[in-house]
Length: 512
Image 1 (spheres, rainbow, N blue to C red):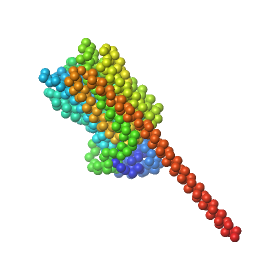
Image 2: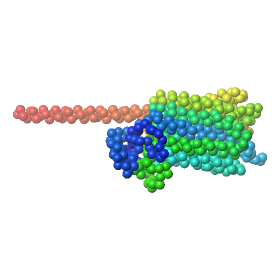
Image 3: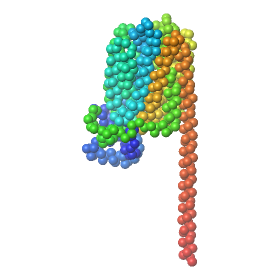
Image 4: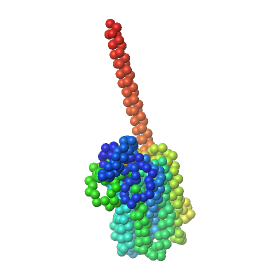
């Protein structure tokens, strides 16, 4: 992964990547780009020669090969993590029926905390995960995270009240998902560049596929085997995620591997390694465009997760004669997958930071669709709203990583994404409980959905500043570069004039 500590440029950069072959059994980087083992003198000489030939150029993404398997593993990661999170509305209704007390008027508020805390913790841990990813690499971080998520989800199936779920489902399971999720975003930037937008669209479409299938699966499982056995069956997804993490072969060595002088140690290496010099790279926020982006996205997300938590209960109260309520999540999942593929491909044709305009567009429609949910008096109209919401949700998700790479570059993308997702945890956690509290006090979700539609408009306006700031900065750089070029030309002219005058004086003296 990308080192977060301050290092000389020659140490931070790696050699040009060669097309990968079959997967090895250890955690070594692909042949070619990583530093060799200290004891391997021959390989060390090859590395020095390659470094001299490539200079400080970063490794060239292979645009395929082993990267396609990495893409599929990352797709499963996105699907299992966010498919479960997006289908929480089905679990929400089941938890209400399972744990609801007759004298408890705030049950929607309490139950909403389980799902919102889980989603929020996934993003809250991302800055920490980025550091672990830089230190230990994508593979170790993802595998350990999947194991922790498995433990949290399994322990959630043995609780007897709603409160322990805050710990088991909301914290342990979510933290494990976070450690498994973020490396799947970062590793793609090492294998793809020209196709990064498309690949991110395919990978993030994994959650759309799972969002389509899981609501129906969970609905049938809950009706047949009840809530707790359903959670145990979901543990299968986390186990497969554990296995998928082993495919994340790094093209860029982790900070620990660089400091140890080798990268051929086993997965559970016992080698004593020194801590990195720099943990959190706060210098990222000196980049104004990134700072604005990291502020605008969280502003837009205060109401983002509200429909995923409360939509099922809203339909249960508003459309009591409808049996297949889960079809709404299917609609969101289908169009979200289409949006991720479509807008991911469109993003490849938008130069630089102009990709941000796609996120502005997506936030505008997400906010509008949230406000239209309580206005739907027919179930068919609600289906149409969910179809539109899913399409632009896919747009927002699929271009997050490409924008990060455009704003800060590939070497800082890990922590840039980590900081952003950490900031996103606050609105993602706070929004659904507030909506649940409004429902408990007002008896309806109407006001909650109206208010959920306002923040996306505010965040979209903030994001519009990014291209303007970037173009202003580019003009300033061009102006400075032009001034330096002019000064250099004047210096050259002066030196030529001085040389000519010296020659003329010498000739005059010889004549005399």
